[in-house]
Length: 339
Length: 287
Image (cartoon, rainbow over all chains, first blue to last red; front, side, top):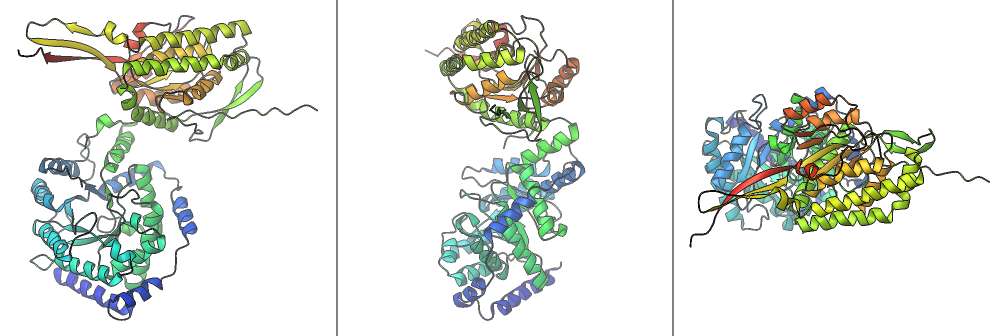
């Protein structure tokens, strides 16, 4: 997609959103629209999610799924104790997940704090996709991650810095306080403003992932509303969680977000990505997500530009499963890196 | 009116819990004269894998406990076994067809053996460790440390409780965690031992008991890269040479099968077989 097309798509999204809402993006209009969305049958949703988790996956499909999972991972380190050295070793792992088997695919991106983008970009060198999606992307969390409790000016500066340092993707958090108290307009405007800050000097945009922090939204209905809000405001991806609150990504929550993405696609033809993050630790769990994506929005979503796993420990488990499939015997933690 | 007996369907003991086999399979346990006793879970390779995961995650806590504490915990198991003597005797009489007196003798010997091994927990270090003489202002200490996760094929012949205890207890002494495949034909003692362990102070995952076919599970445990040692004491009837070769592929320590009444007889060697010696240098202090 060229720069002008991207800008056009952006404009269209904005127009479409306003047309859907039926007026300006004010609290009242957004509330009327979001509260007009049909409610979620929580029992049905959970049942559907658990059904999707029981699909029998045969060996050849499992092999495919494992490589697919690896290529969809945003390898993440978001600790207060992160250092340039740790980011460098994370990048090393992103490029060569299994040093004992070079046929193992690369991950989609590394996800770091804004001030570490510089080091991630330097460590990636020529493997950095730099906006082309050809190599490994650098994703930066921004907007006062994880709480989002800062003034808009500081949040935007946070985004600007990360994009200027070379981030290809920005993971922003929404203001959950504003959302839960019904100030939808404020949340909408913030996402729009952040999206504008993702603009690079050449006019292209860094991908914007909008973190809903579903663990703090209490209900599935809220998750659905927040998903709609984030998509209407122009998010390229909707992401479940920061990974910093006790309840992170769950299958039912991800399923409900995928349903919104599916509905949006039917409505407008535009494709929005989904990123479950936090709490996905085993390849078995990850496979359930793969099945859910394929059966909800379709297999074409199983590509790094439309689906990601935000994870750190998941990769090791997937690698051990991969080693098991290659070697025929179970692998152990001694055969993967210590992160 | 005759009362209908309520035969039990036993489960596995994994990670401190009693799950059914992942495969959903069970097999019949029969007494020595062919009478139906109960159903036992027939564990699959995935249960063996889950058991290794449980054992691995329990390792840090168990190996990190003080030697004194481990000794206390192991001794407590002996106390609980003592309280359940009658149950073990009944089960042994039913499944092995021995006399009550012989069954009592076996249970008593098993309990005594457990106490004997429990005593070694804070003593084997003094016997096997060493302060090495070096020509320099250093202490040079060799200390045995637990190997890690030990997979055991319990003896398949002889006393069903005594064989199991003789294989499991020595591995626990130094702080290893254990995945044990019980006596296939006579698993009742192993299942009851699991119930004892669950109500004792042993942390979940330190001992994991699988019932089912050793021939089916042993190859997966032997080749498993996360298993650090393999005790083939009861694998005499299996193709154990190949198990040993598979184990070697991932640098797993192996104890070979033992047969006869003296199989896995109590010895410090069985404790030390599942340790690795770490040698450290330390300055004597620069005064």
